[in-house]
Every structure is written in structure tokens, then in C-alpha cells.
Length: 152
Ligand code: ATP
Image (cartoon, rainbow, N blue to C red; front, side, top):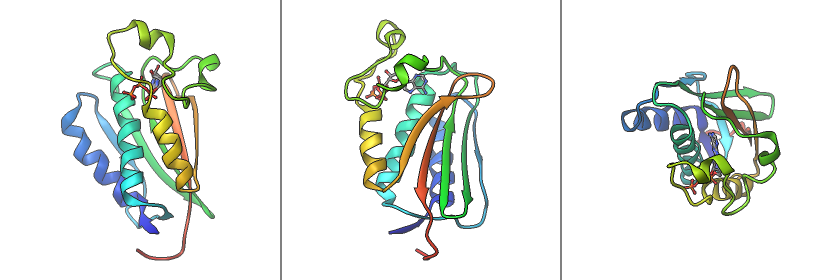
């Protein structure tokens, strides 16, 4: 189903901001960016990535969300300036119940299910998700979705 991912993402960021201390910013076109996907699932994906960015980064460090389109692909990123994820753990964080050691031993609670669900939802929407370093520190999740010419 075609959906305006720029508008959806901006709206999620706006509604999430009052719930967290970190300054959130949205960078993306004001014009519609039409992606193929299910609105509820994309909403859940964005919220789960924001929850993690919030949980695993200091209270005063910015979280940046972007939407961009090039040709048939749409890129959505959620980046924080938190603890980062060691390279050795990155292959496993999308598995059910996997938590990086530092998270297990910290006071941050979690089941390790969030990213497994996100990964399933991204696949159901014919997308991909990857994790990388954020600049200058922290973690960046990148979700690639398929663009469509159809309007919602
Ligand atoms: P929950 O299921 O409640 O979200 P969780 O946060 O432990 O629990 P996931 O969302 O699946 O589970 O994340 C898996 C692990 O990946 C986390 O325990 C944490 O170690 C690491 N992680 C996820 N997102 C980030 C992030 N933005 N920065 C640093 N580490 C992260």
C-alpha cells in the first residue's frame, strides 16, 4: 500500500518528542515521499528504533531521524549518540532475546525482542535494515523501503 513515509516519520517524531529528554530532529523533504508499506507496521518500526535510541543514549544527546529518496529506494535512518554497538554484536542484535553484554549488566531493562520484531516487520514490507556507526558516536539504523509512484 502506498504511504507518505516523510509525513508519517515526521508525525511519529513530533509525537515522540514530549516523551523523551533527548532533542529529536527530523530531516526530510516536506513534499510527499511515497513508499510501499503498511502504515501501522512502519509506525511500530519507527517507534521501536526511537525507543532504543532513547534507552541507549545519554539524556542530553540528540537523536536524528532522516528520510530521503533516490530513484526507486527510500532510506529512513534513526541515529543516536549513545553507547554504540560493538561490531562483533551487530550480526546478532536482530535475533530474538539477544542483548549486548553491556546492556545486560546495565540498569536498562529490555527483553531483546524489539529488534527481532522490527526486522520481521521490515521484511514483511519488502525492506531491509542495517546497523552502522553514527558520526561522531553512537548507532545508526538504516531502513531501506521501496518507492512507488502511486499516491495514497
Ligand atoms: P526490548 O525488546 O525491550 O526492546 P532490548 O532493547 O534489549 O529490549 P532490542 O531492541 O532487540 O532489545 O535490542 C537488542 C540489543 O541491541 C539491546 O539489548 C542493546 O544491547 C542493543 N541495542 C539496540 N539498539 C541500540 C542502540 N540504539 N544503541 C546501543 N545499543 C543498542
